[in-house]
Length: 220
Image 1 (cartoon, rainbow, N blue to C red):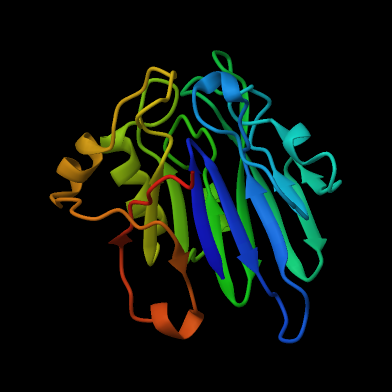
Image 2 (cartoon, one colour):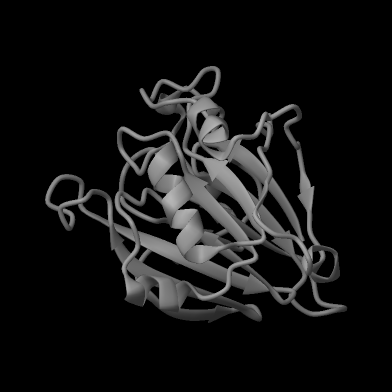
């Protein structure tokens, strides 16, 4: 499995769910160019959208490849990949301020990824139970429109993933007014010395990994 980051909450996940099968390409939360970053492009087989805001819902970027769109809570099985959408909210007032948000878990190659979307609150017991044991957690840390660095630390503690990938934070060129990842690294007491352009995952290589923070560089 290969993961690359386009900025904000948009990741490209390349996976072969079964040996000998063709690669499946998944994109999460594609954004419009108006946010100041280069939108994702290319082939997509599956696109997940956590909520219907312009900086997360640009499924039209892949209209030529006609991907399967997953944008609501529920259980999905697509090309041997298991996806579950879990209902949550974009704020602390049950969606009254910014609406609903869908958390997605994506399971392939015996690896479970959890993408929190624009989560705006701590998780309740039911949400934690539905997420289960996540190998990789993609968590917003920029605050303002989502949980902030301190709240992200609390949510990470609720899930206890093997690998933590911060997302939805300020990067050069981004026009959305949110915080950078400095507060997050300070909250965890770690110094981010190197950004990873591409994350290659194999289940056997992460078996003994615990709460490893991986900050990714933008795919340009």
